Length: 611
Image 1 (tube, rainbow, N blue to C red):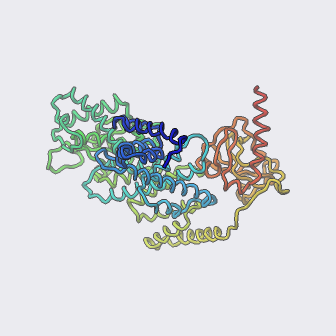
Image 2 (image 1 turned 30 degrees about the vertical axis):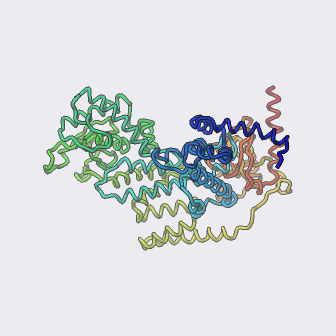
Image 3 (image 1 turned 45 degrees about the vertical axis):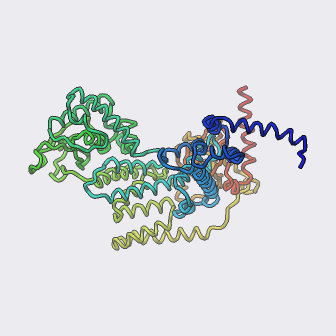
């Protein structure tokens, strides 16, 4: 068969180029293929050209590993250098997981715009096939998308990631709590609490232990200056040996106090004591401050790594550590211990000084050592108290998290179960779960039938009202009854009286709240009373408010509103206003055009004045 001359001329240089390429040394070819300029599709095409390139691009080789690493660098920490990995297959599975995760995230706004995501709302992503870390990684990629776009995607990706990680952490905590009583990894338990309350942060026991190990190294350096032959200096990482001589233990504690409080400037947080950050171990290490229990756990961990067998004491109002001064095997009482106040720069106290510290006499039982579960119970109890302090405009996330943790440890605490049911009912979320909790309470304590019956009745009414709700209410600005509405969804406003910045996400032609709310908010004192448009606004302090039209004005210097629910309603911030997502635009179809006109009139005029 004769070759057409023109085609032969075109094919010749191409074939020659390929011949030159495959004749290069393997290391050079591999370097070119791993240079980062080729996509996965390019590698696929290259590997189909000849046997040599196909061998270089084998599925378990360096080329596909580099493709995976460049595309998803954060996943590489999950692979061991010694493991055999089919990188091409991993690439395909990760890519598929990413597409599935994005598909589910995209569906959430349409499915759950009008309600809080229900308990079973996450079942789709829980039931997906493939490694969970791949789905989590895709959600993190969505959250890290640059710019002020894809706000709705980020909003739901955050909710899904929050849920998935908390479920995993809670399962790990429950398994941890099944360990025998002599399993004394106080730090591990504290890290689980930290992780559960901060599921979107990159917190790991390994990283926190590494930071503590660096403090231990500084203590060893100081200890070497005190006693160069101290046995603690010979300890290897991971050893749990204890030194028994009191004098040698004292040298360790002296070195610890110098490093922690003089060199590194750790201190008890007296100025901001009631701050949840004081209870999170990763924050204690970053901020170098905490409250008695978190400072004690840090002090205890360091001391035990250096061979000093300190023990935790669940002392009322002020967590302490105790240091035994008696002989091993002897019968000991509370006076055979020195008590250490890690919150107070490692000060060593007698029994009398402990009572003076809290201003009251206590029984000998309160000087006893407690196990890991009791220590965690106190930590979570502190978080629970802080959660109850949250303002009524907040999401009560800390209270919800601390209730989850406490009930994971003590699932039959009736009063906490009742508090959890009341909280969900107050927030208007998860009515089916509220009924399950109430049924469990009734089984545990039939005497609670009064409180349980009230909540059951109102929860069932809530469910029925949801069923009776008709379709989406559409509000047209052009309608006669909306003629007095001046502002549109997405506009950045300022409250004339209170000065807060906010964004409008809904409006009514007149006040739609009940008579009690109108009376409590003193609406009748306004010049136009309740017969004027009212606006649902997201406020920069994280609250949601209902503001009268006469109290709002355009913000001449618009800025992003830092509110957790912005993504629920808006897809993008343009620099002057927010663009509603598809679900909000369905409800206010004529507002976007009005926003454009307002932005043109207000901000363009301002720009011209400046020029």
